[in-house]
Length: 399
Image (cartoon, rainbow, N blue to C red; front, side, top):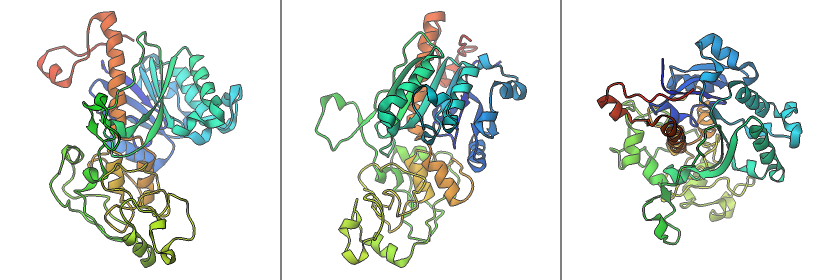
């Protein structure tokens, strides 16, 4: 019998939100649900021991897990996931009954079926302002109706070591007696005015620090070789257990005019920095823009290899980001596998939560369970190293 905290991963994508749990010995992801086949395939490649249900979430529930895995609903300790924000179409009590909000409705249903001790719900920053904030209040009240103490916070992945500005709303619902404490930032913006309270923090990780060991290939090119040995701790971590040949580092072909335009963009430049005859005639203010080399990336999207999308042009090369560069920015190690076409792989990356943010959340949640267990049994969770040295010292949590 396993003594690990059992997790179900809803809307699992490629596994960014649950990454920190999957790589911590105290947790076990037993089942996951994802409707997109290639997305689910990528998840399975990286989580071979997890039962992945490739289906509409309306067909997933406690009966599936009991029948296939012999795990009853009460065995599940944690549920993680966040329905796509497009599902949120109404407010008030109508939300749970509106078919257009079916994804949230299904998340609520699964939560009610399993009744885990804690859940983690992630979504975009816009959730805070949708319908003037009334939608968030509705969501929280629905979770509270199931008996959960609910908290929410806006966390930025860059504050936890990711080389990317990416804000996400993190809702935690808990039935533990101890209040959940959100993780504290480990990094800060060194371009801001000095702050004595930030002395113990590290500067934001820059795009240069994240991808400088990857070749500066041109439009239409591909490379399978690193340009250097790892230059810093982040690169060392990303290249741990990586295959000998670099994968997913290729650039789409762009037309000569677009390449010329990208060549003339300065660091962090926009079309306003170009000669008038080369400026694009369409697009938004943040399209056809170059990233900064000495700053974190802006938020990566599924269109990370499309210059006409949100700022995604490489700071040094006349091309957009490659799939591998996008994965680095999202803190997926080079050993992590994606599946399908370039578009499929970029979707898998662009829709994910940076793994470093997941790591921080997993540690905070583990601490919450540890504190609960300490009070009840006087025991603590132990690191893998401690378990290797102390016989029969695995943590046993209350169910």
